[in-house]
Amino acid sequence: MSGLMQAKVLSKEAVATDVFAFRLEVDDLKCQPQPGAHIDVHLGKDLIRQYSIVSAQGSDSTTVLRIGVLKGEGGRGGSVYLCDKVKVGDILPISNPRNNFELDLIQKSYHLVAGGIGITPLLFMAERLHILGRTFVFHVLGRTPEKLGFYEEIRDAPYSDRVKFYFSGVDTPNRMDVEASFLQMPEEAQIYACGPAGLLEEIDRVSEGWPLWRVRCEKFSGAEVSCEEGEQGDFKVQLAKCGTILDVPANKTLLEVLRDHGMDVPSSCEEGVCGTCVTQVVSGDIIHKDACLYDEERNTNTVIACCVSRGEPGTALVLDL
Ligand code: FES
Image (cartoon, rainbow, N blue to C red; front, side, top):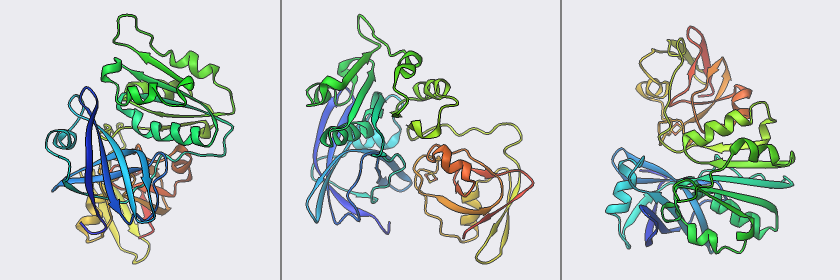
């Protein structure tokens, strides 16, 4: 567990049905977390989960991070353990924050679209944009107010006049019409979205062909990794620094093959979500299967998430390792 820090649980609070907010105190973070960042929480052997940071406050040496955790439906072992077992005063090993979903502050205006527990990174973004006096609209989607994490906090926030709530499970539902809403957003606005797969697929469909910078989405951990026919074949990988060539058979991931040959490639989620295993590629054709890189990064063909992405069958990838 090298490189991990010890975080003390300062508080644990229910912020909706089956949603808990934890405040974690940690010393000597390498850098202050920015909106969109997440941490790995190590809950036991082979039980590492990623949680977006909802807020971060700190002095020079001590930072208090807040995370939001959904227990139950869709939640896996880690979130159930956190919500049921972890208590105030416990110590949790965590990673330094990483940011695959960075808020780009050069834009003229923003639309934030949060579905369910996808609220967590966007709440941090909304607060930052408010503090900076930036123009934004915050679209918040949930089933009911009672089931939406941080609902009361958002309802009472100083920027609440810029929040639009959409609830699908109330007596008079007001669902978001994604297509109509997106087409009304100004062309200079950048859109950040986090939520369940169905919402993000709809956003992908509606924004197809838009400039890549306009829409940034973050998928949840646990995203399904699927391979189209013909993508799951054998390929070779060459390690540029030593020249070694390895075979990656169809039934193994690139990460597994690198590990089998003694390479120390860091990883965490091993589902293509967290970005920990992203490695530089010198040459070769990549089949990207991750949910952590932006399209611009994928298009450069210079980085690969080794835990899920692969080389074109029958070809060779050269890695900067
Ligand atoms: S280990 Fe998380 S993206 Fe590969």
